[in-house]
Length: 379
Ligand SMILES: *Cc1c(COP(=O)(O)O)cnc(C)c1O
Image (cartoon, rainbow, N blue to C red; front, side, top):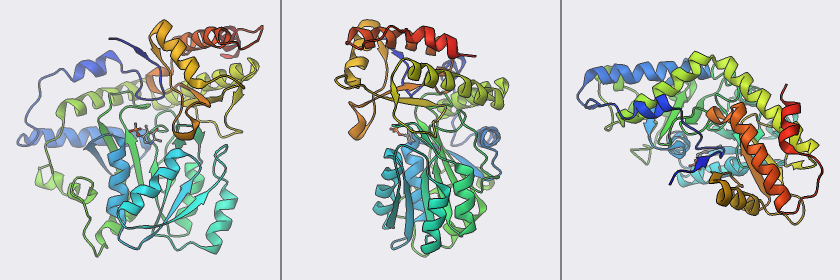
């Protein structure tokens, strides 16, 4: 059964990316050419995030990347700062603790980005952390954090950074080297717009040094990033890689590089701005006060309306999937995903038309039309 998927990830996948998976594949374990092919895809990915770090594509969805970063850095008793201004931000606590880390939460208002000065004041009192975790775009609310400011600040205090940019990168600028990020994690199914299944991690020299200084071995094989270190010299991978997934990821990266990374980022910004402005003009409230990501917009539902009612109406009548939110926000927040291949005028125009109908059908009173407002604001 075909459904139009307009959720904030997994996103739409272009035909050339889908078809790449249908090609015949080599044996990635014994074909040395594949090792160099894999390396070339990692190098292409590095252009997207401006990284000169060690980059690996792991066989597993983005959650594997998050867990692997924590597994490989954490030794029992290590103090870890969990920067928490969203659902995924808080989620890191579990990964750190599974591997024996001692977490301290820096929890701030979920309606805005992390305030640099508040973080600096906090660190002035206590900066004895091996690393800190943070989220670039926390997708359930769409809040964007200032990666550059936060990671540079952490580095000043000698704290390594682990960044979940799964729903940020490509839709928002990432400068891995310039922002002095130590480990960044991405996933194929968000703004990269390939199918779910792979996670990509990039690792700085400082993070690698911390891996090497461990006294206790990593309590995992699959989530141990150190097993990748010598694959190129040894021309051998730790496990059989999903060659088809990697070939389709390469095409997705090529699509981005061919359009031009900056053009892609600008496309996200222009559509996101028009979405936000038209929703406000329609009388709806955005969940956030500020720090809006250009990859997803969260709307707080007016009294009496449930996010799930809107999404069910649109699914039933048009076979279109829209997302509500996670956790405690499920009924309260409706999300418009505008990342990757979803961030196209026609797609968003269609979503706005459907939302206008659904809101009115469910009793929202207005004499405005959301689709017209979107057109007016798309400049
Ligand atoms: C999508 C996403 C992930 C991966 O989580 P899944 O729910 O398994 O898709 C991790 N972090 C963020 C911020 C995400 O948006």
